Amino acid sequence: MNLENFKAKPILGILRGAELQIIEPLVETVISAGLESLEITMNTSGAAELIKTAKSIAGKRLALGAGTVLSMRDLKTALKSGASFIVMPVLVRDVVKYCVKNKIPVFPGAFTPSEIYQAQKAGATMVKVFPADCCGPEYFRKIKGPFDKCRLLACGGVTPENLKDYFACGADAVTFGASVFRRDFLLKKDFRAIGSLIKRFIDAWEGEKDED
Image (cartoon, rainbow, N blue to C red):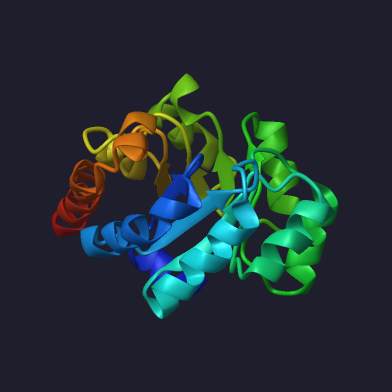
């Protein structure tokens, strides 16, 4: 993952539950819609092959990472498959330590101020605040008071309608997952619907930039 590129378009897609047979049109849909960063969760069946295949299809057009990395075994599998960044729902210290040492962008999850501080101290590239919608955008403003140097990734409940609020309150990046990569869309292979929803996020971000 090129972090400068991610900072320029700080939107991360989270793909869980996709099957290998649809990964090619799905990756092409993601790219065509304008998304540049995508994680595939390690608790998806066949995640390693999905990451490897997606990377082969996307080339340099898409930064591909692994999510729900909860152990060193997960980490090694993800990296061997070609993941270029690592995301977690919690802080797994040995995983973060390895990533920091090897200059791999890593996004551990946290929620409380203490957890956020510990994740930052461990060397997080960004701290994934999860689940963000429990407290909403204003929580980011309050966290940024004492932790103004901490970069925060909002995960959970971000929509094209409230994306602007999260950035205004201090989020440095946002994610979307099941609200876009809906199970019914994946089963029906409704890539047009998925692409349309992704584009709404991209358009909302472009509008946010234009107002700055």
